[in-house]
Image (cartoon, rainbow, N blue to C red; front, top):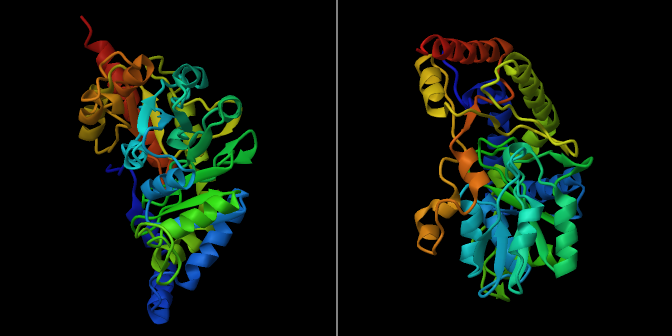
Length: 373
């Protein structure tokens, strides 16, 4: 049996006629930039998130970057975030001229640890970017208390958490959040795309200007901006797919429960355990084992693709080593980076495939046990 880590082709095959019709409609209208579908999607996605405003941009990276700039984050400022994420989060901070400050993570959820964040606040701290990792929200209330105490801004990185909830409320839980629509996300487009959602009218207006060369209308450039618009085709596809998101997330949750049911007897594994205050949407189903590389190789030999999120904590990448970071700075993030293994996860995954994956993992540990001297 061959099982992809994320099988986008399977979903595309199921919905091919819908996608073809949507693409044909955009081609017929021939308004590929700032077409009507963009406004529709912005309004619909804002309502979905329970926010007043949404501004489509060209990627999740730019959603973070333009949010930071809109809040006035720049040179001389510090922004606190976690080291166990994709590089785009810190790229956005660096692009503003601000300094990236890392804080370690919670060992159970792998999300930013508020107690560690509190230790990193200085007179130069201006913002916190909590990352809702793998589809599970960060513990937000303690971070909001810190933000209130020290007059900090919070921009939630929701790029892996479309439809996730914190204490019953959809993320972003605070004022502003950034999403990515990279194709493999829970809500993914046919290329890059992103969006900023906020309850702050001024932030929305600033992001709207920044994404369009600093202009609120054509040839009226008020500030230096960027070319960072969500194109009409992506918006049209996302409008259609948003209607399926809740069901797709339910399927991810169902698959995750089945994985846990089949694997929970293996003491050599740590399985995902959502915090009581979250509704996890399982963008990634990551297990933890000290035998990560051996297990990955064994699964590959049986036709099962897996992923590693993320093999190198960001403070140990070259740009941050050059700034003086070293191994041992963030032991929880470093430890989990050596043990996490992501199993196949997508809505169209079949129960027979999950059974095969689980049986193969059981086989690996049986063989490992029998090979001991």
